[in-house]
Length: 388
Image 1 (tube, rainbow, N blue to C red):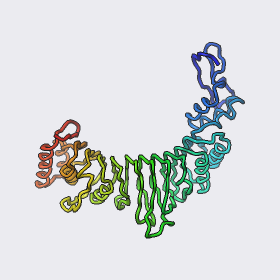
Image 2 (cartoon, rainbow, N blue to C red):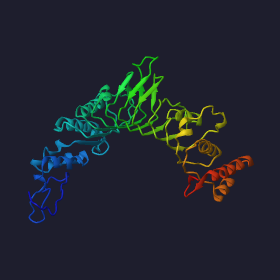
Image 3 (cartoon, rainbow, N blue to C red):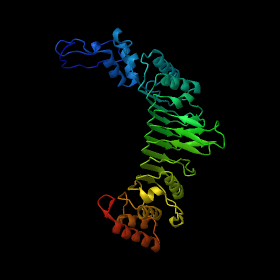
Image 4 (cartoon, rainbow, N blue to C red):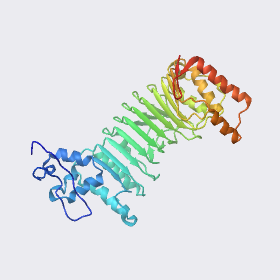
């Protein structure tokens, strides 16, 4: 091994039969990378797309099996296989070969994107193979809704990050434990409580979970959910407008992001489950005309802990102003509001051209909103207001 390597490069073309020297020292043209320690070679190949890591097997006889030491598997059935007639079977053989020949007993990441439809047992076998190799980061993107995930996923001690963009089923029991999971993202996942008595609650224990994001998940045959996550700091939720949030209390949650069209009453119910919330981000494309004077009990987080509110889609309608005023008038510890903007004269003129004219009482209510806001908050810039 030379003390100084002035230059090396990776040169290969799988479409050509001619094999080239893959690395060289510019001083004497000697192969360098082939003599690197196996741990370094495995790291280099693991940082490459898996399809490219496998292609190195054609470089030389010495490189025929070097790819089997990779610890990241990142595969997509829409990239490598372009012939539709053979793409599915080729991809199946490709994935099976990776797991069969892989020498690494530990996987750091398994990322699988499937655009074609595969039999359920095939998908489960790939997931199980990753779990057997103590995968830490699991990401699955698939569209078929006829797959029930293996139960061993719940007690996998190696799994720290899981992202599922997949309308699959979780057949859950009354008690479910993810001992090492720190980040969880679920999109359209369906929880099926067949094994949960109707009088019992569904319990999820996440002792080290820090981030939880749920998008349009469904709870089937489930009446009550309890999530124990003592260190959870970020919770994001996207729910359908016809869904009532089925959520437990998050006593450690400090920040909430909501992307939804649910009514204001449902949002307040959600806030009741987060008593120590300090920051909330609202990307609400529609606010219903809710009567905030009828609120019987204010969420404790609004009264005692809320410090910052951010509107990402403030549409300047009367319901928007009413929600904003409800928050800043009741949040006694609120220090900052982001995203509030007045209508410009051009915007008003444009609305008049299209016949969108507010009644005089509505215009007066909006003007009163800005007048009261300015007595409590100071406008900094770009829709940012801080408490005086």
